[in-house]
Every structure is written in structure tokens, then in C-alpha cells.
Length: 551
Image (cartoon, rainbow, N blue to C red; front, side, top):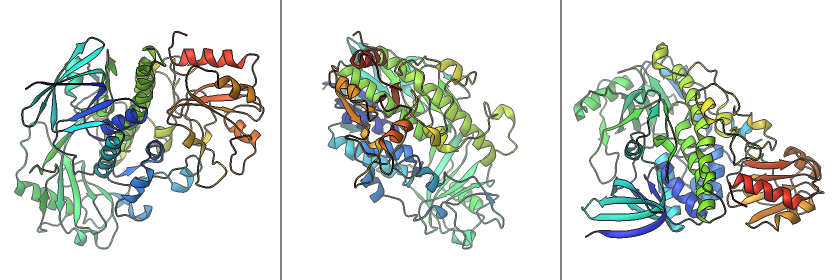
């Protein structure tokens, strides 16, 4: 029997990016349905930590306490030792560049990086999304999308064969690197889509004899093949994730072959190895992931958008792929909500690609640069496209974006040039130097009072206007706008901890009579360094431009 449903946004894909997108949409009050073909979440940990920017984002939707409660069993950053060696049992380890220093990060974010496996994060996202009303259907496969009056029509099928028809105003494809939605739309990838293929296992194996008392979180190894790694699942030395290269023509290895691969990487030829299923409810012990280095030619086709791996493929080195994907979802969600609610014109949705595609291209080049040093020493330049770039600080890659689009007052789209590496118009800014420039993430300032709150906590739901201590006219003007805006004045109803009102305003690039407008995603949309003759008219003009509204 064919069943019919309706929703405002359909999200295809129930991994980190898709679940995040559904949660952000629900947070903005958008009715959302998510479908995922797998019967449940993957058990594979994949990304092992959340960087401060992702913690900021998840804090906005009430997940920060739950994430801390579900941290992995590593107590200190010193236990996250990353090494290179021939095998895990090698006498000599070579160190690999570590994560950003937590003390330094505290200067520009209220959040710290948190050790937590991606599968745990996904479980928390799914629970929170359901709490906010997202309809989530695992074990439901998308058979096809077609244009429908005012949106899209999806043909779906459950594992039991039940067919569904779902009509949505917009669809978001978060269906992975192979993205059937992207292929169906005819959107090509620019770059070597299949950089290499990674074969992964989750195993129980006591590798403590190889460690010989040493602490290793991640080991990049040369045996049994180049680009092999072992990742500890806990501190016991008995639970591991194994990964190695796997040629596209290779048949999946049998259990005995898998055991020998793990033994070779560990340097322990007789150690017992037990394979564990990687998808709950199945017997799938071997998974393959295509590791690519490419960006989609476009992020939108009509009412359908690409996010995460569907929009960009990058090596895991640097941990940029998941971060960029969640930020994609965060950027797109508030824009879809603004259009669905009638606050913005369709042109606002075009700024998603204008802003996010250059970010993905830059992060890809940074991932390739790190790939060379970690996994592919000696690899030829043909294998490492776009890798001739000096590495920059990870936090700058993840938090220093400088957007240029019509969603930034005075901004101009320059996505094509930056994506190809031909322009530095949107080159990231040092996070420590963020000072309220339009198009950049609004700076972090601790707020006075209990609870460890920050100016970062003001963002996430609606536009926020921050005015200098003499900027009451801006606050009054914001209250007359035809859409909800939160307005605060430094020194009046917004006190920074240990900082004068004038200095807090200056940190945002404004004088005592100026104002700065911050978007729901925490990026500065507009700024006036001083007072205006007609603040209401200036704000209305800024909003009209930013939201692609007709007036």
C-alpha cells in the first residue's frame, strides 16, 4: 500500500551531518523528516573528538552536557598520542603533529575540544532531534526524487518493502561520498573522486605486548600496506579500529585474511583477533570507505541541496571532513528556516554555496597537506592534488572562515575563484584576531555573572544586534523591524567579564555609538562603527539585502 506524508524539509542520510542538519532545522522550528537506508547507526567511531567550534554549535541546541557525559574513556590530552611507525610493535615511533592546545583555544571559545566517538555523538543527535519533533526513519531507502509543485516528491521504501510517497518543500542530501542524490541530479565532482579506498575493521585484540607500556591513541603504520592505521577504542589496549588501503578491484577479504592484516599492523604474528560487526543488527564486519579529494561543482540544484560528504570529499587527516559537514548543515538550516517562515527570499539560499564551497576547498587543501606528512611520505604530486600549501593552525581552518556573499552586507560572491585556489578574498582569519569583521565568526567574550556564559551563547536562534554603550538608538530601531531580533547594549544589559563596555564594543570593531549584527549561525552580517542619522532605515536596508527580501 502506498502511503503519503508531507514535510517542510526532507533530509536524506542519517550520519553525523544529516542528523545535525535535521536537529538544527527543528531547533529553528522547521518540520523535518530524515530517512536513512541502514537499519541503525554505525558502531564505527570514525571521528574521535569534537573540536571547540562543533561544541559551540551543539551547545546552542542543548547537547553540550550530554556530550560531556558521554566522553570516551581517555582522561587527558596526553593519552591522545599520535605516532608513525612500521608496525605498532616497532621500537621507534615518530611523533605526528598534535591537536590544538586547549589553553590557547580557551582564549577564543567558551568550549573545549571533547574526546567522544562519532557513533556516540550520532546517538545523542538522534535522540535530541526526536525530542524536537524530527521524524526519523532508519531502514528507509530513497528510491528517487522528482520535482513537485512547490518542492520535491520522494519515493521511499522500508526494509519490509512498504512504499512511501513524501512531498517536501526542500530536500537536503547528506547521503555520503557516493551520494545517489548527487548522481541523480547530474552534479559532477571536481577532483579525483576516488583518491583511494579504505578497508576498516573493528576488532578485539590484546595489543599490549606491541605497546610495551607506551600510550598510543592513533598509529599510522607502513604494514601490511601503506596508509594503514590502528586506532584505540579505549585505554585497555584490547579494542581497536583497523584501517588500510583496499584497491577498487579487490574482493573483500575473508575472516582469516582480516586477522592476518591486523596481526601484520600490530607486529604480533600470533595474537588472537576477533572481528566485531560494524552495523548493529547485521553481521557486517568489513566496511569500505572511498577516500576522495574533490568538491561538488555546485551545492544546489533547484530545491535540493548537498551537504557533508555529498558535497565534498577529503582525506581524514586533520579531521576536517566531519567539521566542515556539520558547519554546512548549520549554515544551511537557518537560511532554509528564514525562507520557509517567509522572512527571506529564495536568493538567500544561493548564499549557502557561495559561503560554504570555498571553505570546503580550503579545508581539502589543508587535509591533503597533512596527508602527505602522515600517511603518504614520498607520494608523487599526481597523487596529491592541491597539496602545495603550507599547513595553518587547525582552529583557523575550522573557525576562521571569511564569508563573501549577499548574506553579508557589502559582501560579494567569489566562490569560484577561491574554490580553485585562484583568490585569497575569503582566506581564513586567525581565530585569535577575530574582531567583528563582516563575514567572520563573531568573537568570544566571557560575560559577567555565573554559568560561564559567553557572547557566543547569544547566537543560534535569531539575529542578534550588539550595540556600543551609547548605541541605544540602534537597540530601539531593532525593536521596530518586521522580524524577531534580539538587541543588547554593552554596559547596559550586556556586561562582559573583566572588560569595560567600551572595550567589549571595540572587540567587535565598533565605537561607543556603533552596532554589529550577528546572524543565527554566529557570523557577522553587518556593522556600523558609529551612530547613524536614521538607524531604523539603515538596519532595514541591511536586513533587506542580507535576506534577499523584496522589502
